Image (cartoon, rainbow over the protein chains, first blue to last red):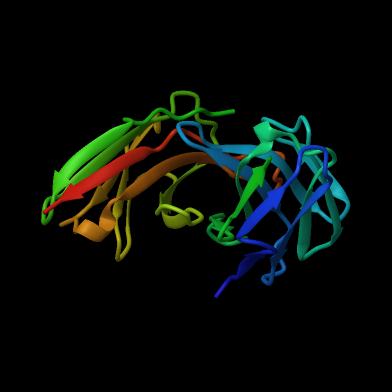
Length: 112
Length: 113
């Protein structure tokens, strides 16, 4: 079974703090993704990575950066957290056969 | 980038068949169509994927007409536990993730007793 894990289910941070969200997949997938999900807006792609040290901007990259130093790990970084970054953050990796995405359980981030 | 359009919500009753249609007018030749299910406070879960005609698995069927500009997810005999949000996704047709994956707004299905 593919497993995508995220470092925290719930996180509370203060405005201006640097925030790291970690995602690890155990299936040797090359492609990994970070989304945020907000009520009424569905899932929006922030960044994705198709290989180690490679990254591409998604639809809403502003205010975020990412790091992919190892194939299994994809980190989302909020350099200076703001209240409008309060959201559910979902990580995913993509399978090679059916091309379906496997999602982690999500991290609910609250920035106060 | 192929965008998708789905109904915002649908209601059904236990035991009925539910069909959710997704429009994707500018689907690319090498794009696949994938459907996901999401329960509250969980990540989306893969249901089914297809390229053309009909695909069936133990959970659902996916109907894709010849022009591929739409697709229909069919859930046979739904139960209360099928209450969820269903997303249609178009893309990932190549091994290069530069073909980005964009989710639409999803369809909120409510199954009533």
